[in-house]
Length: 116
Length: 117
Image 1 (spheres, each protein chain N blue to C red):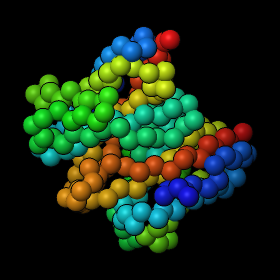
Image 2: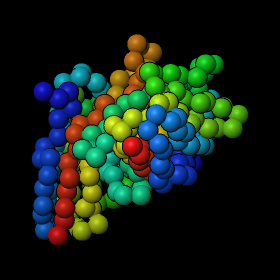
Image 3: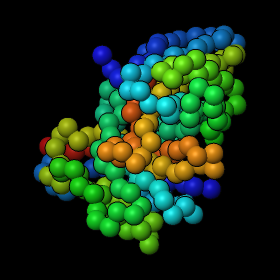
């Protein structure tokens, strides 16, 4: 099983619908992130969380909300989906530097969302 | 604002040749980390290589090396002996420490590499 799991992997929805993308991890990392990927724009940070009590907005948080239900779970919600939120969404985790890790991000497999 | 720039939207390289993917960054922090990720057509993000801002030697991982020029704020990825399986999108990323003590990672727009047989 993957260390960082995203559900659903693919979703087609309609404008105005509420959508939740879920992320769970077994790496034991405190830090979790949500990114969206659009062609030509790379990955852009939506929200990130240091721990269950810490939620921070990224560069493109408008239209999104998140919930950190537990250390291992970080969900992204689109309260009222619109077509320009059609994108590939990634959840990622990281471990603090200072240990043997380089502190790289560990990504889930991505959730492809299409809003019609 | 911190920024990552990848100026090559697409590149071609002949199989078995070396290729350099460019990345420049902008930060006022003294401590930061630089990363390269590979994204094949299947979509997953694969970590390739890391360079810390205080590392004096260029990082290497197998056929991947990072040409780190701190004064120029560049962190180019060099792939030696290209293989067909290297065809993918490549992202440069930088980790920076925020004022709240968390780490934030920002990404460039990517370079799509095509290896020709």
